Amino acid sequence: MNWLWTISDLMAAMNGRPVGNLPEGITGVSIDSRTISKGEAFFAIKGDRVDGHDYAGIALANGASVLVVSEAKLPALGRLIAPMIVVDDVLEAMIRLGCAARDRSAAKIIAVTGSVGKTTTKEMLRHVLSPLGRVHASVASFNNHWGVPLTLARMPEATDFGIFEIGMNHPGEIRPLTGMVRPHVAVVTSIAAAHLGNFSSLDEIAAAKAEIFEGVVSGGHAVINRDSAQYDLLERAAAAAGVSHIHSFGANPKSEFRLAEFAGGAEGSVLWAAIGGRTLEIAIGAPGRHIAENALAVIAAAALAGADMNRVVASFATMQPEKGRGLRHRLAVGAGYLTLIDESYNANPASMRAAISLLRDAEPPPGGRRVAILGDMLEMGEHAAAVHAGLAEPIVDAGIADVWLAGPEMVHLRDALPPEVSTIYRESVDDLRTYVLGALTAGDVVMVKSSKGTGCATIVQALLEAYPEVPTVAGEV
Image (cartoon, rainbow, N blue to C red; front, side, top):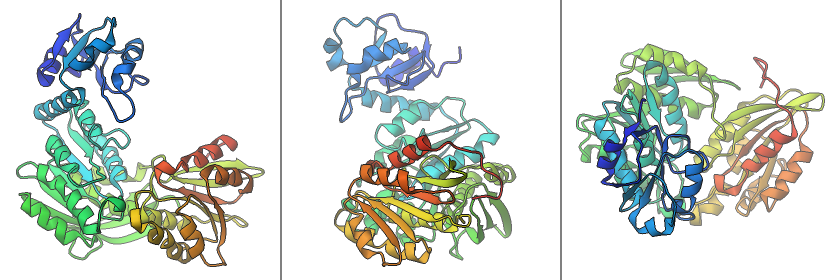
């Protein structure tokens, strides 16, 4: 059996004590009793809302081969008879296991943070590096105090490239995570007004993102967006953290990995990247200038990790947008179809503008409309009114004539839009969803964008359930 961890290594890493008849090893690590697979270890983490110890029995029934539980919770498990490893604190034990996984690995480790584009950049790296070796990367957006150690703990010893997304909502959150990951290459994609309610300025956000450099291994690399107004701050922070090699990407003429030219299309784009005295032409299987900018960061990170760049460049052509991050659906409506652009995963002012540009570049057939369905951007704090109203300018510049809004903060955008923009506003997402299902027609291109917590993803789901999906024909939107 090809174990992820032998039981002896697992217990040694976590400083745990055995209870019951333990298996020889485990095939995986899980914290979710619903999705656990046979042979995996279930870590009964106590979260903000639920305690994993309450689901230990379900985890066993679904195939868990061993439970990792807290000493203090052992009496509460009552008469549950199961193989267990008892630890002082389950989350701390998973952190220790993650650190042990990093210690035993010879993989090239890349860590990615930034206000916008973290997950997209991580998924691009997964895609372009997979043909070159065994890649281990974060699932979804597992980028916080439990997601990062869980991803580390799941990393097989025989990994060639490890890719980790690291996020934060407050200062000081990235520091311990990058200390666990210890990247060879640390990437900062961009600095934008995300979580602005928790910070007084973009410089404060940049300083918090710059914590990622503190974990970079000796001789490692920092990759920074030179188009960011906070580039100098980030560069100084990387140098102060002792990073040996600092690199830049972007359209700025001083960028080491420079966007020389960009040609956008409805379904893909072409990027010309100037690198070390030569220019690479790169076809990307996803639209949007922001995707091309992220691709530059991917090219830099892959090159610095020692990847075969010819194969990396070739892989961009087969890249596809992710669910909630630009994935397109062609849905049958009457005798025609509509195009749905799903940008519903998350939103801040920068990503909103990027999504508006995607909709601008999508060309509907005759009689069709470009429709922007927008929900609130969360965590904007005292800046909420200004940043929502500020979306009026890019909407008008993009020539989008139909804007449908939901949420208390979107009132500010409604009031800022000029009369020539046909604006529909509903206080709740539920009310807007009902309107949307009755208002779209064949030929429409509709883009849904909001912060995840607003529930606007239910509008996407409702459309997918209401209209059958049909194959996209080459050359169509």
